[in-house]
Image 1 (tube, one colour):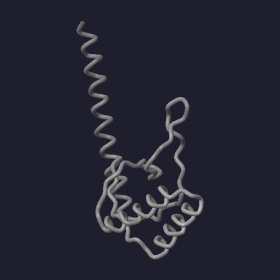
Image 2 (cartoon, rainbow, N blue to C red; image 1 turned 180 degrees about the vertical axis):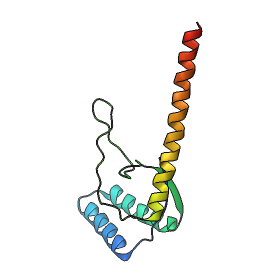
Image 3 (cartoon, helix red, strand yellow; image 1 turned 180 degrees about the horizontal axis):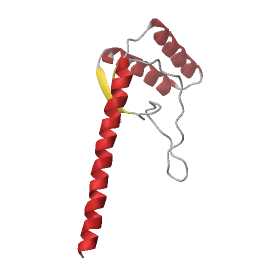
Image 4 (tube, one colour; image 1 turned 135 degrees about the vertical axis):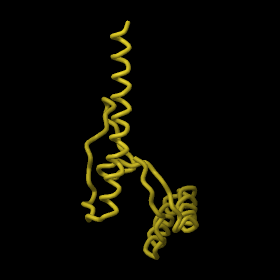
Amino acid sequence: MPRTYVVRKVEESDRAKGEGWARAEEERGEFDMAQMTRANLRKWEQEEGQEREELACPICQRQSLTPTARGTSRTHTRWDVPQPSWDRVRQIRKDIQELQAELDRELDRLEDESDADEVT
């Protein structure tokens, strides 16, 4: 399901953590990685406050679900239990409506196919 979020402000602790990672990468001789770490931090600072949309699981809110060898997704893992909020309730209701509409479309297609099979 699509999720809209706002890129959060970069805190001093984020800058310190990023710079620490970059220094550690330089010490290991990974100069390209250090440059990339610093570039990512600069990009984050430029994007502060911008609204973004990404796909996320409607249950656990993860942006990436890792498939199993059979091709099915892994079980949902909650990293933290979200505090209840009206925004979350509204989002869940919207997700349910979108999924219900998709279910109705699929059922209609199946019924149309079975009606066509009966006619022939």
